[in-house]
Image (cartoon, rainbow over all chains, first blue to last red):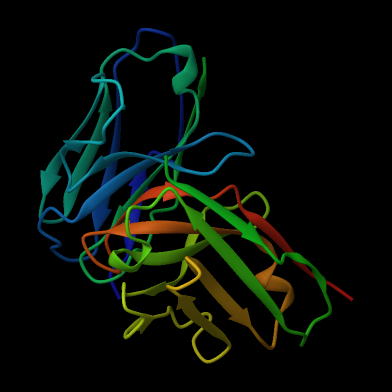
Length: 106
Length: 121
C-alpha cells in the first residue's frame, strides 16, 4: 500500500504569510494527489486535484505542484479563513490520506 | 447543487452491527458517479473506508475494515450504503460519504455533513 506523509504536522503563521505544506508518497504516483481543507466540525473541502488543478470556486491564492513522490500545497497570502487542517490524498491506487497539517494563528 | 445526507449513525455495542445510508440529491445522474466513505475518529485525521464504482460492480476496502464492512448502492433510489458488522471501539468516528471523480479511487469533490458512530458498551 502507498503511504502518504505530510510536513510539517503543524505550523503557526500570520495573515499575509506565504505558507507551503509538503506531501510525500512512499512510491511514485505521477500526479495523482489531491488536497483538502477541513475546519473544526465541518466536512473536508476539495481545494486541488491532480496535483495542480484548482477546484472550481477555490481562491487563486491556493496552488499545488509536484509529481512522482513529492508534492506541495502553497497558500500565497494567508487569509483569516484559511486557518484549518490540510490533508493530501493519493488517488493512484486507493484514496488514502496523509496525516494532515494544522495551520493556526501565530 | 450536489447534496449528500448521511443517516443511520448512533450508539452500538462492541460486536454489533449498523447500517449507514447516504441520500444523494442534485446529481444529474447518480448512477454515473463512483462513491466513497471516509471516516474521522475523534481528534484524528481522515481515513478512507470504502469505495464503489458507478454501477456497483466493483468495491474497494482497506485492510482495517475488509471482511467487516460492505459498501453498496441503490441507483434507483440515489442512495449509498455502508453495512458495518463486528464493530470495535476503534470504529468510533464520524462517517462521511463523498462523490468520487475520475473513478472509485479518485478525488472527492462533494461531501455529506457526516454521521457519528459510537461503539461502546
